[in-house]
Image 1 (cartoon, rainbow, N blue to C red):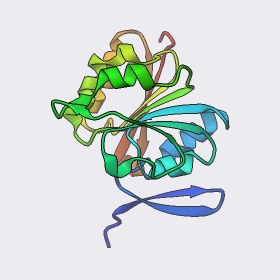
Image 2: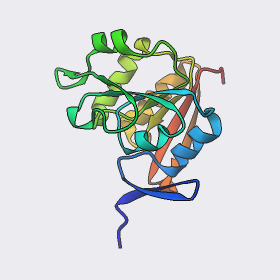
Image 3: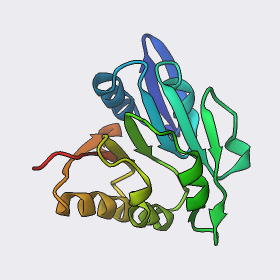
Length: 173
């Protein structure tokens, strides 16, 4: 039988999330490295937002109106420009001044996530950045660009190698 969901166990509670959601490994990394009560800015809201919001103040950039206000988060509705990437003017005007983690898991296609690189100047790059789905070439390429700039990048396998995410640290290698 094929499993078509992600299982996250949090303090004995089991959550069956879609395969698009964050993994147990990503959830555990955040819980082990980001103090409870910290602020997380995420690009793309999803089922993981609901779990993370139990421990963190969430800000969720979302282009899809169907995902707005689904979970306990401060939503920033940023429609796509030319069907590609979030409207940068909306981001600049509405992003929180301070956040402790940037979780890049938004926009449903890899080519759109490459545009995160082109718009990185909008974000605080001194906080840890999680790039989800780096098992895909385009997402991995973004992580490697950070590595080439001198950021420390660690790749973490998830779901027995079926998924992967990268953590980007603004620390020299």
